[in-house]
Amino acid sequence: MRSLFLAASLLASTSLTTSTAMAGAVTDVGKKGSKHHEYAPPKSKNCRNTGNFSAWLSKFKKDAAAKGISQRTINAVLGGMRLNPKTIARDRRQGFFAQSFVSFQKKLATQHRVVSSRRKIKKNQATFDRAQREYGVAPSVITGFWALESDFGAGMGKDPIFRSLATLAYDCRRSDMFRTELTAALEIIDRGDVRPSGMVGSWAGEIGQTQFLPTRYLQYAIDYNKDGRINLFRSDVDVIGSTANYMRDLGWQANQPWIEEVRVPRKLPWEESGLEIKHPRSKWVAWGVRKANGSPLSGDDMPASLLLPMGRLGPAFLAYPNFDVYLKWNQSLNYATTAAYLATRIDGAPVMRKPSPNIPILSPAQARELQRRLKKRGFDVGEIDGIIGAKTRSAVKTMQIKFGLPADSYPTPGLLSRLR
Image 1 (cartoon, rainbow, N blue to C red):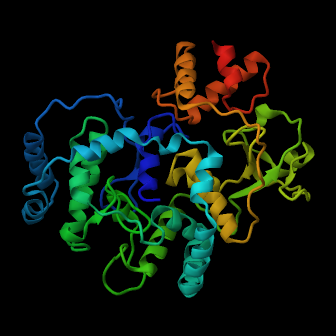
Image 2 (cartoon, rainbow, N blue to C red):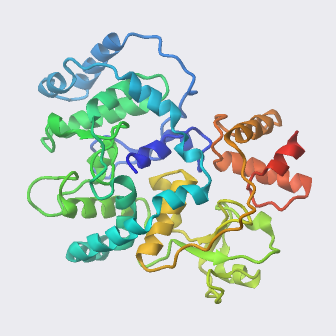
Image 3 (tube, rainbow, N blue to C red):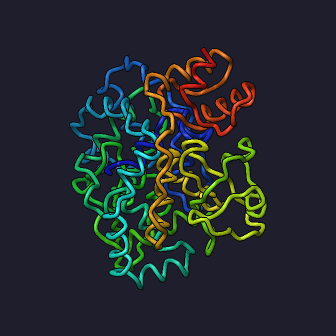
């Protein structure tokens, strides 16, 4: 699925974390070891561009030169640059992430990707072993992202990256963020890593087979095969090393789990579910949570959250501290859970248990109505877009508790009726 990484990361503030609309933590351009920073939330999808693109571009060129970008690169890349209205329209849509988790993962965590990932690991076993020794990241975790982001290079995109970045940098919605990304992309050209003609990829301006934003490329892309050049477009070795390098910096803990499908009892203190709450695994065992096959879990002190992406009737997972890294990579709950689950499948976990056929699902129109009604009650749910993210789920749990309903944070038509 092309361009999933940024497409989900750039969702409005209804995505999973409080930094939702900021595309996560982004590093300062070109400085090794620099601190992460977050961008301001994006403006509404209904914001209007009032300025002239040519005038904006002229000013940006001057700003880029003042930041040290060579005039040669500026002329080569931005000379004759034109706005792409299709990129703006595509950025405004992104309805793919409004699907239910079951539908989303069924389309993405396919058996084909499991098999392809295992083949890729076998082909590059020595490199994966080296990356695991040096960075602590398991091959299945790397290939899970790699498969979803570009199907191992088959779906990197065919759009001119600089035109996409310039368009999004001009656009009112996320101009601050994409000005920084455009400057970073120019720096990549300036230092000779890639020729301008080689900067072809996603409509959202991502680079390479695991779809790095330009700032992330400057921070984490490495010449892992020691051939004197970083190549995230064609070098498996560089892709593996760079991805592992990035994940370690995001906080990945070696030899630790990330997610595990579980079976939950009919009765549980549902208000204790949610990624914001962690309990020792032993407590979940005491409450009757078991492995997906029904066998007992380890009753130890490993901190874990009960993740119920579709409520108490849907799939259930214990999410461990490493799952936080998935959410830093991509803040869409559906994407992060799917990527984590896919990695476990690559490692040999069985196919997910079939959920109840009676899970109530809101239509997109109902989801937007739910958000509007929650907003009227004083909740900050971010943009009214029908995408159920962290803020909406938090508000849902609060109202479930108020109404005496099972507080699993999952919105239903029944809850909407109560809100009416």
